Image 1: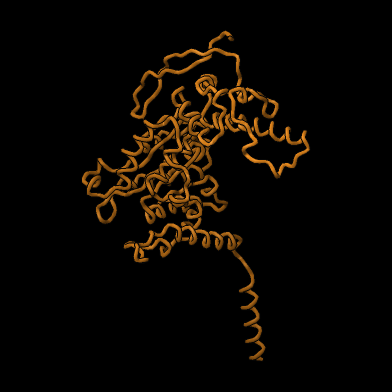
Image 2: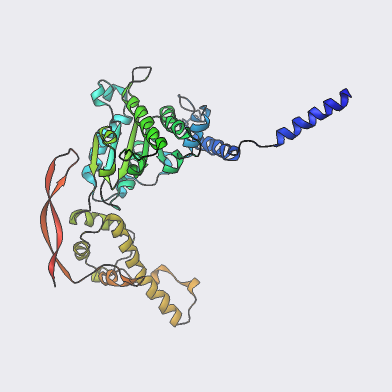
Length: 384
């Protein structure tokens, strides 16, 4: 009888071990594996003698369950391929970011640690129309600074269990402290930290309150009396929808407007630098003029569509001659011409022509909050 009872108990224990009561167990295990792999990539590089540099090994950090979930959004600086050299037309903003963000965030405390006034801002906001390079600028900032980049997704903070979103917010800042210097980037920040309303769900309001509480903690020094090297970086095209309390925590605000003619010239030069050009039939200054009002993203897509025009010509020519496509060479493709920008792509003309352009002076905000005059091209009412 005793043997039967022991056998029954052991069988019960075996069955219980095989049952999975945690519905998120597989997801948690996947997060643990991925976060461990990411932290290994963040380890400091080795010296010439193949020994690790002094400092804690990031892969040896003990992460909580919620920090592991946030760690899946971590990107190592060397994995970001965008640099400031890849961005055209935003030189003033780039220089300001270098001086007010990168240097205080990464340089020795002997330089910027002598006064709390010289610390990096706890929050930076990039705002402006869609497609003007805000996200690209944020990635380049992380790459140039060498800081750990947490590309925080909205879905990461959205949990089905009540209260878990607050714990994830806490994990964002606790992980950032462990990996500092750190940049926490929130694209479309208005969707996460928008204006609080009475009709808002209680859980959403609690997440915002939790976020602001931890954010305020960034301004205090650590246990060694050193400033925290953590910055929240946001990007939005709807600055009016962001809560006022959030805007107050982002003292550095940089407008990223539609590019001017000089900025479009710089952008087009970068986009077309590796493209074969028919110089006798290509007028870059005219392309700059007719693309007034287009964003940097629009310019890149227009160049992509225009560059496909000579490729299509080559394909159709080889087909008509009965030649095989796998023997085609890049030398068979002619250079890009101005007229390629007025061809049809998907049934729509790439760039609309037939208008004359003039300039006007408009009021535009600068990074320090002042208003200055900016010359901007505009279409005339009459066609040429």
